[in-house]
Image 1 (tube, rainbow, N blue to C red):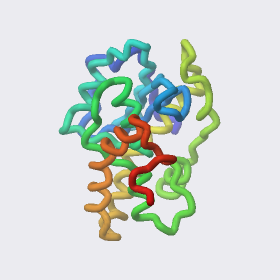
Image 2 (image 1 turned 45 degrees about the vertical axis):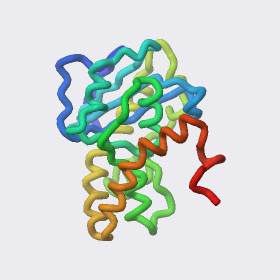
Image 3 (image 1 turned 90 degrees about the vertical axis):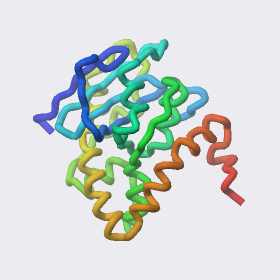
Image 4 (image 1 turned 180 degrees about the vertical axis):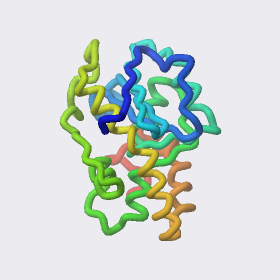
Length: 206
């Protein structure tokens, strides 16, 4: 972890940042209510030990971020993608595709695991311990603290490696095709969330 590099940007990614064909992504918002709590931060990594933390302004004029999210040739890797793709769609106006969700993948192929949070996943698969202390800090602050930057970066620095491990397990358990069908549905699930059909009013429930 000491070799990781964190770059802090305001408003958008710089024009010269190239992240490759598989990009890990996470978001930070003012809370967990998609209809109430605004998107504040987007962090990205290509899995090379470098993280880019982008603090968005309220105009959400971020063409470089939008280009990456809309690019069908770039796989976006999330943990609990349902929330992140919904926040990105609402505030940046872009549908993320294609998507890989490490939480869904974990639930499909690690059925013996008691927990599927990112902290558990990184420890179980990679032997990495994440500090989640800043999870509920003020992401709307004018300037992000060093602790916030480190927290945000850690949420994407290991996702590429976790995704690779999960791909092997999904194939071993014969559930890779099922996982990718679930990933394809995430934008529809997110749209339902944004329209008010969340867990307490799930159209798939009885």
